[in-house]
Length: 135
Image (cartoon, rainbow, N blue to C red; front, side, top):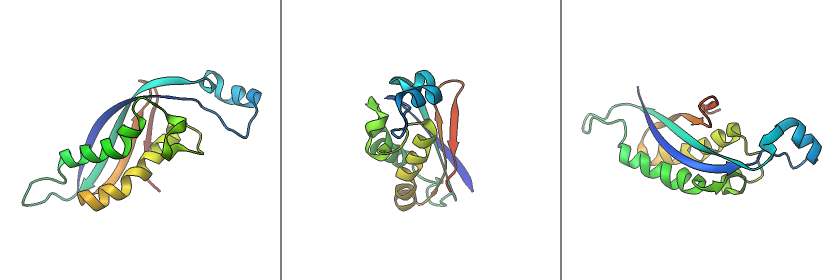
């Protein structure tokens, strides 16, 4: 098995909020992140597979880039994460963003690229990094 990672970047705003909590509870739990704020995120998507003897590739990175742009970056870049279709009804934590990105990418990567999604990693800040490896 060979693992390949593609990096993309996006800038988005979010607000950490549980709709079941009142303002005081949200403020106590989320602090200043209860206010809308933004980040310049880095997304790392790792796929795994066998090297094709005819191409020498696990998958064509141009095709991986197209899937990432189409299914994720085009929806998140310069958007309010709380309003993004695949984040509706979820707390817009970066943990949940990682899981939602995985859910958006798992099938297209498997069906269109003939490899398997291994990891979704999101850098929110230089100090806060989130990884999801699926269920």
